[in-house]
Length: 218
Length: 265
Ligand SMILES: Nc1ncnc2c1ncn2[C@@H]1O[C@H](COP(=O)(O)OP(=O)(O)OP(=O)(O)O)[C@@H](O)[C@H]1O
Ligand SMILES: [Mg+2]
Image (cartoon, rainbow over all chains, first blue to last red; front, top):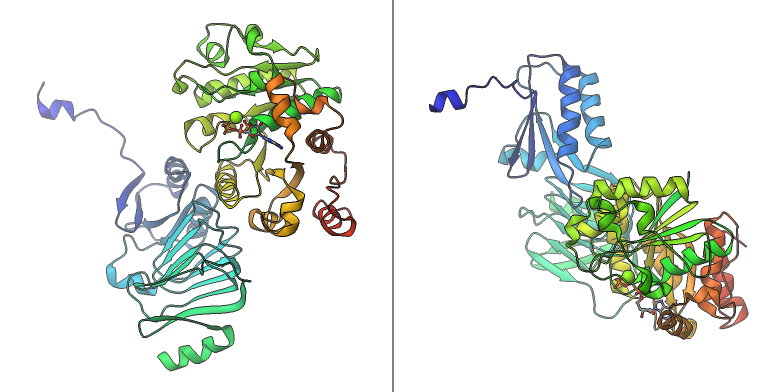
């Protein structure tokens, strides 16, 4: 059998193509068919990507299609209700320079043991981060709840990133390449504090100082 | 149409099998028709704890593979006419039980029984996924230890991803004196980390070990503390708002606090 004959069977082109890229998954949506068909296919594709552990960022590429606000809302809803993918944007695969200007990622719920949230920007958690839960952010991490897990802020080398929590009792915090672990003796959780880098040292301060620190840095 | 409840924990040896046997038996004691399913392929225990080991002819994998009918594999309990066990296989390959065949088996059992209690193996791999696949509800068992709570948290995350809504918590092997001295994780701490509804607490009780060796679930003895814990849990499963048991370290302290957790003041 010749090579061309083998690849010949006319297979309908995928309306949605999923590609693994460095920072997550790229969903390429066909731009020359009805959006409803694309959405239906997208739903299947998202479900096919569900893994029981960890969270991935999904970048959406729409080609020549003019994406309306309605379309965007529907696509975001599909990602939000199926699986554990986080929409990273609609402009296709991210370029390295755009990584620093990502919208903050807001997660509502408990980040439980074994869960990993990675985002190329700031991360806001409305809930607790439990021991064994992990967040890796290029920017800052703010936790409106009890931090008991592990956080890496400024993960791509930003020394000015901070980690803040209502109850600050992390197993481990990292900013850029500086690591600090929990004291071996258990203490009461600190209330409303944040961690930042003072030179090569990690420092912890009351939240009230955050605005001052920001002003000093800019 | 009955309800399928999976008993799971992540960490091994925290009391999944003990809880399955005692909850199943306590529900039967309360007049319900119950089938317990052991999904711990290769490490089956539930039959031993129930004292039914010598009656096994077929097992859950025989049912899944079509080697026998479901009814042929069900073992009737020696104490209750309404209590049955579907045993795990001891020597077969655990991958022989697929999520799909488990769903079919559980669906059939739900037609015949008020409750299907599924004893899950330790871990979060294939066996876990098979055990939870047909379940409507989940009970997460932990002990007052860091590692057990950590694994329970992991499992709760996985259950939430499986769309098993709001699992319930059992804290097993509580030793009131140690807890009071702060040598054991506090019930409050555990609930605050796991943010789950507490279904019940079970004291550490040597009757449990003795009972397991005699093949007689602890709930059959009205006087053991663990038995009281499990009887209360069974009543709460049936919707009865029973207060948490008094572990009597001192009156106002532990007990008063515990009532608060299940919404009784
Ligand atoms: N409340 C209790 N008091 C005293 N001993 C207990 C209690 N609960 C469980 N045990 C003992 O702990 C041991 C482990 O219990 P069990 O077999 O129920 O755990 P499991 O979670 O099913 O373990 P596995 O992960 O191996 O399936 C048994 O020896 C049992 O008798
Ligand atoms: Mg067991």
